[in-house]
Image (cartoon, rainbow, N blue to C red; front, side, top):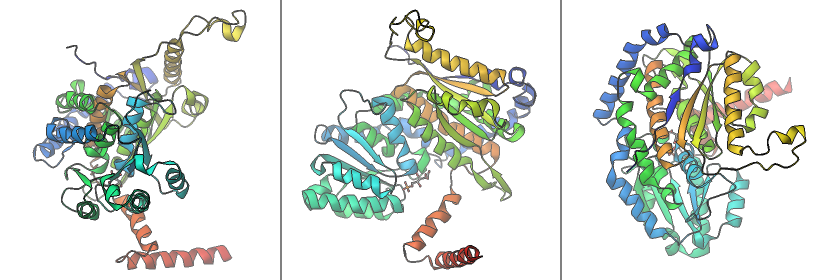
Length: 468
Ligand code: PA5
């Protein structure tokens, strides 16, 4: 069997001797941080070995994979729609996997076993349209929430389950729902048990945004025809390297350190992922959540105020060359660009030699769209480099399951290591909690009286200011 090709990382253009002093990394920067890098690998490794961090072990859990495959096989041909109700880490992975394997939207592979719909918002317009247009008899509902209580997901679930019961009857409706949640606690777990839904577990030692390789991402992916075996093989193939202590042999560690240093020493507090692939573009949004929710923290581990984290934005190449590139070239010097490019495209499209005498068409005729696409990425890279804008490239051999599996595991390790460099907890999200609690208070959930008092005080103060 041919060995699968691996993702490559080219960081030449992050170097100060390439992009200019003060704009990029020096050998001294890296040497000074080798002990910290080794310590990061040791600390994360120890947590993995103690079973506190579960994400690196997921590709080797054959039983979990087989359980999802069995369920997906049994559902094949029964449904036209797979409707995911979830948000954040419980939604973005499924969308990214479907786009990479079956997409990009709106054009899809000709034969997908079912179409994925991810409802990761509570905008009434989108849910209303979905319920108007989905055929309830041909819709399999996946309600995905690790905590089993997230307001957005639970409200969607109540609406969709009620709709389903009214349309197909209570007995059938229960068979058309699968729940993915914590195996030990939470309201969804109890509801799923009492209603008799198919039930899948998110391992307790795998946090929301690190959970794509659990049934959170695997179940929807398998139902819409993603080859989850290849995905897991890709993810598993990088784990050993991700645990090596040397920067030279550990892409995740090196890239975490690069971003950390560029942010904290050189003011590059924005990482723009410039994705030259429509199929991989949704993966950039999955990555954006992983990176920003993990690293954006007010306090470090010693409870000192640090207000750290690097903003991640997603851009699509070449489309955003006509939208974002101007800012990246000439705007504030606060960005590092991470290009994502794909080596091999399944389509080779020749540009016809029409209108050969015209300036704007003559030189294009006879070339391929693939050449143009590659040339535009190269030209953008060169232009950024000449302008002293640090940039690096992640080169995917192909936009397929194996490569996306590699990328997901690399990104999770990279994020974990970056958390160590910033000396923060990359696995919590205290900043999201307050917004959630205030929403509960506004909607009258019991036990949130203090938040209700805060809301009343805020409203009073705002009304007084508006009167002035
Ligand atoms: O990374 C996280 O923990 C969050 O983004 C969660 O995935 C998100 O808030 C959804 O949580 P839950 O799966 O509990 O509904």
